[in-house]
Image 1 (cartoon, rainbow, N blue to C red):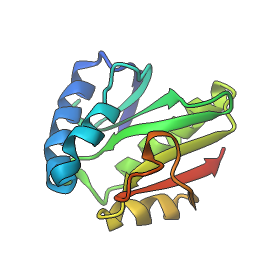
Image 2: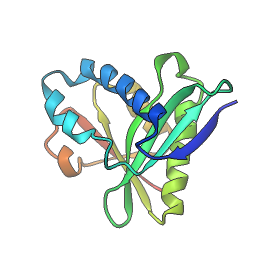
Image 3: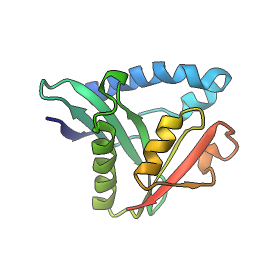
Length: 150
């Protein structure tokens, strides 16, 4: 059974999962590492969800941070390889969307990398629509951005 915990970016399980995520992303970032690295700072993420298995092992995470008056940006979504394809990312994403709605936001936006087709398909499957790149990602050629009304 999977449980989720609402927390913040100080959570040690979240921090450990982010370390794994950053190691995974090094393969994709290549020469863009410094650009994406500064955008992935977790200090500004006040709302975090960590998923746990029945043995209390942290098996996935994601966060939201305010982007504008009506939009929350989804950040640091990650499920380790050995836990993928089990519905964990969907549970986390739905939790983040619900939390955003509870906080009176109307939309969730996010960025992922064009080189990650599994992530792109995941967001499309969860009713996210491709939008023009936003914010710091406007000129990021390797980025693709999404939005969903919640």
